[in-house]
Amino acid sequence: MTPLSVLTLVKDREPHLIQLIEGLKRSAVAPAELIVVDMSSTPVAQPEAPFPVYVHRLQTGTLALAAARNLAARHARSAHLLFLDVDCIPMAQCLGRMGAVLDEDDALLCADIRYLGPNDARSAWNEEVLLATGRPHPVRSFPATGTRRETNPGLFWSLAFAIRRSRFDALGGFDEAFVGYGAEDTDFGFRAEHAQTPLIFVGGAIACHQYHDSYDLPVQHLDDIVRNATIFKARWGWWPMQGWLDAFVSMGLIDYRDDSIRILRRPNAADLIAAHSGQS
Image 1 (spheres, helix red, strand yellow):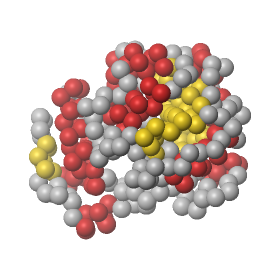
Image 2 (spheres, one colour):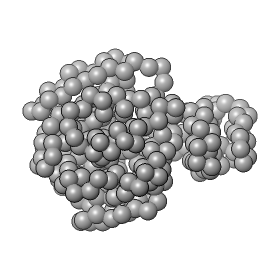
Image 3 (cartoon, rainbow, N blue to C red):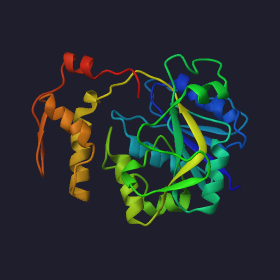
Protein backbone atom coordinates (compact mmCIF):
# COMPACT_ATOMS: atom_id res chain seq x y z
CA MET A 1 0.00 0.00 0.00
CA THR A 2 1.22 3.50 -0.80
CA PRO A 3 2.37 5.28 2.38
CA LEU A 4 -0.36 7.42 3.90
CA SER A 5 0.12 10.75 5.67
CA VAL A 6 -2.55 11.54 8.28
CA LEU A 7 -3.40 15.23 8.70
CA THR A 8 -5.39 16.89 11.47
CA LEU A 9 -6.18 20.35 12.82
CA VAL A 10 -6.46 21.17 16.52
CA LYS A 11 -7.81 24.24 18.24
CA ASP A 12 -7.98 23.88 22.03
CA ARG A 13 -8.91 20.19 21.92
CA GLU A 14 -5.71 18.50 23.00
CA PRO A 15 -7.50 15.63 24.85
CA HIS A 16 -9.24 14.75 21.58
CA LEU A 17 -5.90 14.82 19.76
CA ILE A 18 -4.48 12.35 22.30
CA GLN A 19 -7.29 9.89 21.54
CA LEU A 20 -6.88 10.33 17.78
CA ILE A 21 -3.21 9.41 18.19
CA GLU A 22 -4.18 6.43 20.34
CA GLY A 23 -6.34 5.23 17.47
CA LEU A 24 -3.43 5.62 15.06
CA LYS A 25 -1.20 3.63 17.42
CA ARG A 26 -3.70 0.74 17.28
CA SER A 27 -4.13 0.92 13.50
CA ALA A 28 -3.51 -2.29 11.59
CA VAL A 29 -1.66 -0.12 9.05
CA ALA A 30 0.61 2.52 10.59
CA PRO A 31 0.60 6.01 9.13
CA ALA A 32 3.77 7.22 7.45
CA GLU A 33 3.45 10.35 9.60
CA LEU A 34 0.97 12.55 11.42
CA ILE A 35 0.84 16.22 10.48
CA VAL A 36 -0.80 18.45 13.11
CA VAL A 37 -1.72 22.05 12.41
CA ASP A 38 -2.12 23.68 15.81
CA MET A 39 -4.37 26.74 16.10
CA SER A 40 -4.78 26.43 19.88
CA SER A 41 -4.62 29.33 22.30
CA THR A 42 -1.78 27.51 24.07
CA PRO A 43 0.48 25.34 21.87
CA VAL A 44 -0.14 21.61 22.21
CA ALA A 45 2.60 19.44 23.67
CA GLN A 46 4.70 17.48 21.21
CA PRO A 47 2.93 14.10 20.98
CA GLU A 48 4.83 10.84 21.42
CA ALA A 49 4.07 8.07 18.96
CA PRO A 50 5.79 5.15 17.19
CA PHE A 51 5.54 7.13 13.93
CA PRO A 52 6.74 10.65 13.09
CA VAL A 53 4.54 13.48 14.37
CA TYR A 54 5.09 17.01 13.09
CA VAL A 55 3.31 19.95 14.71
CA HIS A 56 3.00 23.22 12.79
CA ARG A 57 1.64 26.35 14.44
CA LEU A 58 -0.92 28.49 12.63
CA GLN A 59 -1.68 31.59 14.65
CA THR A 60 -4.81 33.23 13.39
CA GLY A 61 -7.67 35.18 14.87
CA THR A 62 -10.17 33.16 12.84
CA LEU A 63 -11.08 29.51 12.46
CA ALA A 64 -9.08 29.22 9.24
CA LEU A 65 -10.12 25.69 8.28
CA ALA A 66 -9.34 25.94 4.56
CA ALA A 67 -5.94 27.54 5.13
CA ALA A 68 -5.06 25.06 7.88
CA ARG A 69 -5.89 22.02 5.74
CA ASN A 70 -3.85 23.43 2.87
CA LEU A 71 -0.93 24.07 5.22
CA ALA A 72 -1.09 20.49 6.49
CA ALA A 73 -1.08 19.16 2.92
CA ARG A 74 1.95 21.26 2.00
CA HIS A 75 3.92 19.74 4.87
CA ALA A 76 2.87 16.14 4.18
CA ARG A 77 5.49 13.92 2.54
CA SER A 78 3.38 11.03 1.26
CA ALA A 79 1.62 10.66 -2.07
CA HIS A 80 -1.63 9.79 -0.30
CA LEU A 81 -3.36 12.00 2.28
CA LEU A 82 -5.92 11.14 4.97
CA PHE A 83 -7.52 14.13 6.67
CA LEU A 84 -9.02 13.41 10.10
CA ASP A 85 -10.96 15.85 12.23
CA VAL A 86 -9.23 16.04 15.63
CA ASP A 87 -12.41 14.67 17.22
CA CYS A 88 -12.17 11.44 15.19
CA ILE A 89 -10.62 8.23 16.48
CA PRO A 90 -9.72 5.95 13.54
CA MET A 91 -10.62 2.33 14.14
CA ALA A 92 -8.03 -0.35 13.42
CA GLN A 93 -9.05 -0.97 9.79
CA CYS A 94 -9.72 2.65 8.80
CA LEU A 95 -6.31 3.53 7.38
CA GLY A 96 -5.91 0.21 5.61
CA ARG A 97 -9.31 0.41 3.93
CA MET A 98 -8.88 4.02 2.85
CA GLY A 99 -5.36 3.39 1.61
CA ALA A 100 -6.31 0.28 -0.35
CA VAL A 101 -9.16 2.04 -2.16
CA LEU A 102 -6.99 5.08 -2.85
CA ASP A 103 -4.38 2.80 -4.42
CA GLU A 104 -7.04 1.67 -6.90
CA ASP A 105 -9.10 4.83 -7.42
CA ASP A 106 -8.02 8.41 -8.07
CA ALA A 107 -11.05 9.64 -6.17
CA LEU A 108 -12.29 11.59 -3.17
CA LEU A 109 -12.95 9.07 -0.39
CA CYS A 110 -15.07 9.50 2.73
CA ALA A 111 -14.82 7.32 5.82
CA ASP A 112 -17.80 6.12 7.84
CA ILE A 113 -18.29 8.24 10.99
CA ARG A 114 -19.91 6.91 14.16
CA TYR A 115 -20.96 9.45 16.80
CA LEU A 116 -20.06 8.67 20.42
CA GLY A 117 -21.87 9.60 23.61
CA PRO A 118 -20.58 11.96 26.32
CA ASN A 119 -18.94 9.21 28.38
CA ASP A 120 -17.34 7.26 25.53
CA ALA A 121 -13.57 7.29 24.88
CA ARG A 122 -12.82 9.68 27.71
CA SER A 123 -9.82 7.68 28.88
CA ALA A 124 -9.24 3.98 28.13
CA TRP A 125 -11.47 2.60 25.38
CA ASN A 126 -12.22 -0.64 23.59
CA GLU A 127 -12.88 -0.63 19.85
CA GLU A 128 -15.67 -3.21 20.04
CA VAL A 129 -17.51 -1.07 22.59
CA LEU A 130 -17.12 2.10 20.52
CA LEU A 131 -18.41 0.36 17.42
CA ALA A 132 -21.37 -1.02 19.35
CA THR A 133 -22.33 2.34 20.85
CA GLY A 134 -21.42 4.78 18.06
CA ARG A 135 -24.36 6.12 16.04
CA PRO A 136 -24.12 6.31 12.23
CA HIS A 137 -24.88 9.54 10.42
CA PRO A 138 -28.64 9.84 9.74
CA VAL A 139 -28.21 10.96 6.11
CA ARG A 140 -24.91 9.54 4.83
CA SER A 141 -25.30 5.84 4.09
CA PHE A 142 -22.20 3.61 3.95
CA PRO A 143 -21.92 0.01 2.79
CA ALA A 144 -20.86 -2.53 5.39
CA THR A 145 -18.09 -3.66 3.04
CA GLY A 146 -16.81 -2.53 -0.32
CA THR A 147 -17.47 0.94 -1.67
CA ARG A 148 -20.37 3.03 -2.94
CA ARG A 149 -20.19 5.80 -5.50
CA GLU A 150 -22.03 8.84 -4.12
CA THR A 151 -23.56 11.03 -6.82
CA ASN A 152 -24.42 13.98 -4.57
CA PRO A 153 -21.25 16.05 -4.04
CA GLY A 154 -23.05 17.97 -1.31
CA LEU A 155 -22.64 14.88 0.89
CA PHE A 156 -18.86 15.18 0.91
CA TRP A 157 -17.71 15.85 4.47
CA SER A 158 -14.32 16.82 5.74
CA LEU A 159 -14.43 14.91 9.04
CA ALA A 160 -12.51 11.96 7.59
CA PHE A 161 -11.53 11.86 3.94
CA ALA A 162 -8.65 10.68 1.77
CA ILE A 163 -7.28 11.87 -1.54
CA ARG A 164 -4.14 11.51 -3.59
CA ARG A 165 -1.79 14.46 -3.18
CA SER A 166 -1.68 14.91 -6.96
CA ARG A 167 -5.47 15.19 -7.08
CA PHE A 168 -5.59 17.55 -4.10
CA ASP A 169 -3.04 19.81 -5.81
CA ALA A 170 -4.86 19.62 -9.15
CA LEU A 171 -8.06 20.76 -7.43
CA GLY A 172 -6.17 23.65 -5.83
CA GLY A 173 -6.81 22.46 -2.29
CA PHE A 174 -9.47 24.18 -0.23
CA ASP A 175 -10.42 27.69 -1.31
CA GLU A 176 -9.04 30.06 1.31
CA ALA A 177 -11.62 32.67 0.36
CA PHE A 178 -13.81 30.70 2.76
CA VAL A 179 -12.72 31.93 6.17
CA GLY A 180 -14.12 30.50 9.37
CA TYR A 181 -16.97 28.05 9.65
CA GLY A 182 -19.11 26.72 6.82
CA ALA A 183 -19.22 25.84 3.11
CA GLU A 184 -15.49 25.35 2.44
CA ASP A 185 -15.90 21.57 2.32
CA THR A 186 -19.09 21.73 0.25
CA ASP A 187 -17.27 23.94 -2.23
CA PHE A 188 -14.40 21.42 -2.33
CA GLY A 189 -16.83 18.58 -3.00
CA PHE A 190 -18.45 20.44 -5.89
CA ARG A 191 -15.10 21.42 -7.38
CA ALA A 192 -14.08 17.76 -7.22
CA GLU A 193 -17.24 16.75 -9.07
CA HIS A 194 -16.69 19.53 -11.63
CA ALA A 195 -13.23 18.03 -12.24
CA GLN A 196 -14.86 14.58 -12.68
CA THR A 197 -13.32 13.24 -9.49
CA PRO A 198 -15.57 10.48 -8.12
CA LEU A 199 -16.87 10.72 -4.56
CA ILE A 200 -16.67 7.28 -2.94
CA PHE A 201 -18.02 6.17 0.45
CA VAL A 202 -15.75 3.44 1.82
CA GLY A 203 -17.31 0.62 3.83
CA GLY A 204 -15.32 -0.71 6.77
CA ALA A 205 -13.29 2.51 7.09
CA ILE A 206 -14.72 3.70 10.39
CA ALA A 207 -13.76 6.61 12.60
CA CYS A 208 -15.56 7.34 15.86
CA HIS A 209 -16.36 10.99 16.55
CA GLN A 210 -15.74 12.08 20.13
CA TYR A 211 -18.55 13.94 21.86
CA HIS A 212 -18.09 17.62 22.66
CA ASP A 213 -20.30 20.54 23.53
CA SER A 214 -21.63 22.27 20.46
CA TYR A 215 -24.63 23.95 18.93
CA ASP A 216 -27.29 22.13 16.94
CA LEU A 217 -27.72 25.42 15.09
CA PRO A 218 -24.31 27.17 14.93
CA VAL A 219 -25.55 30.66 15.74
CA GLN A 220 -22.12 31.53 17.15
CA HIS A 221 -20.78 31.31 13.58
CA LEU A 222 -23.49 33.54 12.08
CA ASP A 223 -21.08 35.99 10.43
CA ASP A 224 -18.88 33.23 8.96
CA ILE A 225 -21.88 31.35 7.61
CA VAL A 226 -23.39 34.45 5.99
CA ARG A 227 -20.09 35.48 4.40
CA ASN A 228 -19.21 31.99 3.15
CA ALA A 229 -22.73 31.30 1.90
CA THR A 230 -22.56 34.51 -0.13
CA ILE A 231 -19.25 33.44 -1.71
CA PHE A 232 -20.66 29.98 -2.48
CA LYS A 233 -23.86 31.42 -4.01
CA ALA A 234 -21.86 33.69 -6.32
CA ARG A 235 -19.83 30.70 -7.51
CA TRP A 236 -22.40 27.92 -7.78
CA GLY A 237 -25.70 29.77 -8.16
CA TRP A 238 -27.52 28.39 -5.12
CA TRP A 239 -27.47 28.86 -1.38
CA PRO A 240 -25.61 26.25 0.69
CA MET A 241 -26.47 25.46 4.32
CA GLN A 242 -30.12 26.26 3.59
CA GLY A 243 -31.35 24.52 6.73
CA TRP A 244 -29.24 26.84 8.85
CA LEU A 245 -30.16 29.92 6.82
CA ASP A 246 -33.87 29.12 7.10
CA ALA A 247 -33.48 28.65 10.87
CA PHE A 248 -31.70 32.01 11.12
CA VAL A 249 -34.64 33.58 9.29
CA SER A 250 -37.09 31.97 11.74
CA MET A 251 -35.08 33.40 14.64
CA GLY A 252 -35.16 36.86 13.11
CA LEU A 253 -31.37 36.93 12.68
CA ILE A 254 -31.21 37.33 8.90
CA ASP A 255 -33.22 37.95 5.78
CA TYR A 256 -32.06 36.31 2.57
CA ARG A 257 -33.38 36.40 -0.95
CA ASP A 258 -32.26 35.21 -4.36
CA ASP A 259 -29.03 37.18 -4.44
CA SER A 260 -28.21 38.57 -0.99
CA ILE A 261 -28.29 38.03 2.77
CA ARG A 262 -28.84 40.77 5.29
CA ILE A 263 -28.04 40.34 8.99
CA LEU A 264 -30.88 41.83 11.02
CA ARG A 265 -29.48 41.31 14.51
CA ARG A 266 -26.77 39.46 16.40
CA PRO A 267 -27.47 36.30 18.43
CA ASN A 268 -28.16 36.99 22.09
CA ALA A 269 -27.74 34.79 25.16
CA ALA A 270 -31.20 33.29 24.74
CA ASP A 271 -30.41 32.33 21.14
CA LEU A 272 -27.23 30.58 22.21
CA ILE A 273 -29.02 28.62 24.94
CA ALA A 274 -31.79 27.58 22.54
CA ALA A 275 -29.28 26.41 19.92
CA HIS A 276 -27.10 24.41 22.29
CA SER A 277 -27.27 20.67 21.69
CA GLY A 278 -24.17 19.26 23.40
CA GLN A 279 -22.98 17.22 20.42
CA SER A 280 -21.41 17.93 17.06
